[in-house]
Image (cartoon, rainbow, N blue to C red; front, side):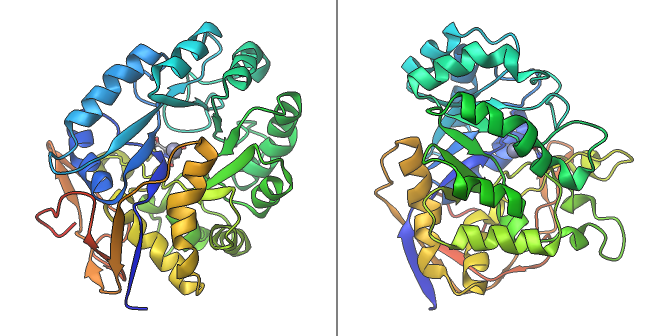
Length: 354
Ligand code: DOR
Ligand code: ZN
């Protein structure tokens, strides 16, 4: 197959930050995707519908004029979130979910949740209003090995919460393990998972290839080969409760190449093309559209997009970096080839062909 045309996809897990960096990255996503679930872990975090409204306006102002892109906003759950905020969020029409970061689990999560029981009233209200809970499923218990944090969190923390709120819609964000995949497969139709392109393409060997590779460091951390294979298999299986969420997470080169570098891999510049590579390698390009453009919209109760994009099997070279302000970001595959190219996006052809 030399080219494939699919319904314009949605990204159900995206970090766009704010300010100059946001203005650099939003056009990359807006060219490829019609909508994206926007993560709320700014400094300070997006804890209310009003903050989400203001952030949404700033994102919309960064969308190129010839693109059509809708940011789907989320709230950052804290132990102080008032249960009454859920009705306000639902009524807004632009808040589509609430994100649960275990405190200390990842970037800008220190305002997150230490004890989820303190949020049970909020979860009750989310269940009533049918507002999905998006989970960063990793324990912060320092006694638990970094590579085991997802599986342990699912067992100890998430499974009991799901049992207590059986009608709450829950998304395990960026699932990375066989155990996570199995958990979703065994769960009710209210439980789903997003899958990133980078967790399908890389295993943990990529962290240490010829030296320490900060641009392959993300959370949850890359796992062993058998886990990578399990999530790539889940993504390409056609199962309706696995869908696309890039977790594209830009950080400046300075923040990545540091003694204590930030977690996050930037993939928005080539996101749908990278997923196409994953599906192509497994002979499953015919399943790409369902994963990228149908399952997520269906789970969130959103209409499927009406427009199309076309990807061609034409290799192109990713730039070494993208500039913003006085710094740069180093994208996934920097300087290397991507096998698929978008020939018509929902938006702009940019200068670098990106
Ligand atoms: O690698 C990551 N980066 N994982 C996350 O959970 C957060 C994200 C970020 O915001 O940088
Ligand atoms: Zn994320």
